[in-house]
Length: 419
Image 1 (tube, rainbow, N blue to C red):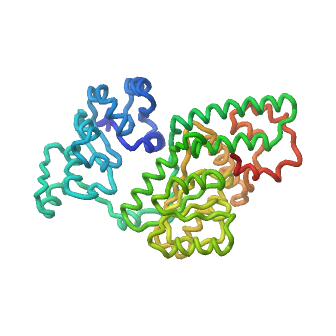
Image 2: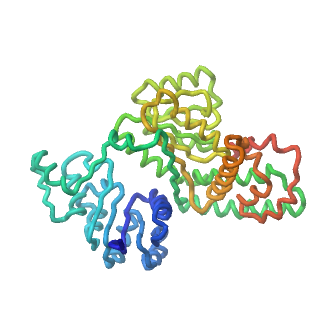
Image 3: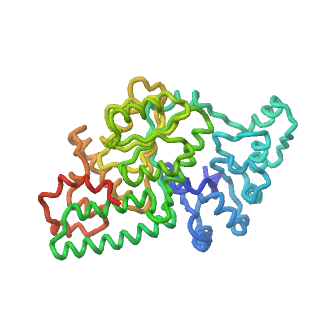
């Protein structure tokens, strides 16, 4: 107990926030410091006392002059194959860290050649000589004391049929800038409408959905922390086997098209409500039967019911719906009779945004309904109270009394494809 007083986690930039979230969830007694942002911010964060620091590979390389002065009880590399090339600046920087212990986490520690593994072990166990001319039995024997492998078939026996995982991400600088500008502009507009007693629910929904779509990607530079994470996830799936993935979004005219344009390397199929019945059948048949079609991009409403997609075992909710029951229906397209493998559901969320507050409101309502009426669940956004809508936008709930009601609720969903 207390053997580790200072630890460092190095991972891809898209995973830093999620590492911190998980540490705070499972180890709340420890002080955790996320080291991200520009150079001056990172310098400040490194100076903050903490038990665990979490940063990206590139940030660490740029901050080496600061970090190499520290002494860590353990350094953990997530996606350790990032240093498979031993002579890169990234790998050299990591080897200069002062550390007592070192761990490397990777699903693909050896991607192409023995030298991939050699570079990782130069960090984990510098004194272990892995001669590239060693035979495979000799190599296995040499690394065995320092290598713990968990095969998929071994792990799956321990997992529940469906695993849900929230992945918390940090907006890119471009997203954050556009988000803050839109947030301020939207708040001013709503306050002005409220002062004139002209504020209606569609006005609020317009601002909410605009902010939510910026959380998916910014409109000018098309940058996206969610796409960055999804790209890395898909790369691992493609490299590791024949698994198929379904990605779901509620925004057909913006996010679905954005994903299709930016994930062309994975030869995606696209499924949405504008397709004819014959076209929809063709998309599903091809996804189920073609080994070259491993990614299906789908709108939530079109794909929520009536489909059998057991050929996939990964589902990614690129954005959250207001009603968790609708999300469960989408999950059950792959988690249903005929599915022989545990299903992983990833829910992508952005930290410090409207998504965080929406999450809090919906989870609170979900707990309440499950406690009181079990599975009787409200239909969606139109059931959120004025107070909850104002809470989501971080506005004074007292202003809710100025909201004009009547005649607008039936059109709430028309704003889902706004922008």
